[in-house]
Image (cartoon, rainbow, N blue to C red; front, side):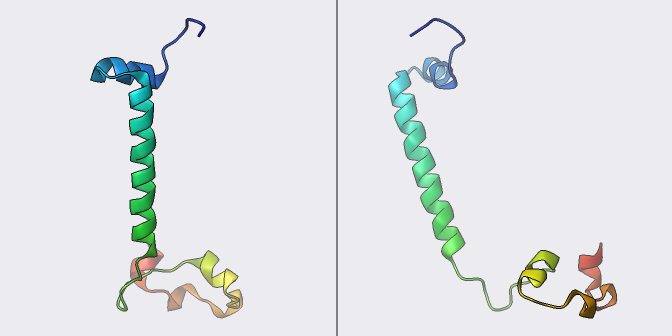
Length: 80
């Protein structure tokens, strides 16, 4: 390897007193575990009484006629 600026994993390895390979493996495992947790959380259904808010883009994608929408019909908490 050509000497130069240390990589992030090399810096972490030095600070944690681990090998750079061990840091890379630990990072890979942490990212994999985080991805699994995030995917599991996203897969959870929303409660029936969940307040989703107002999403104009979602309404347009669903085929709602934009002319039939009015700011006056939008709840005040969303208009801010």
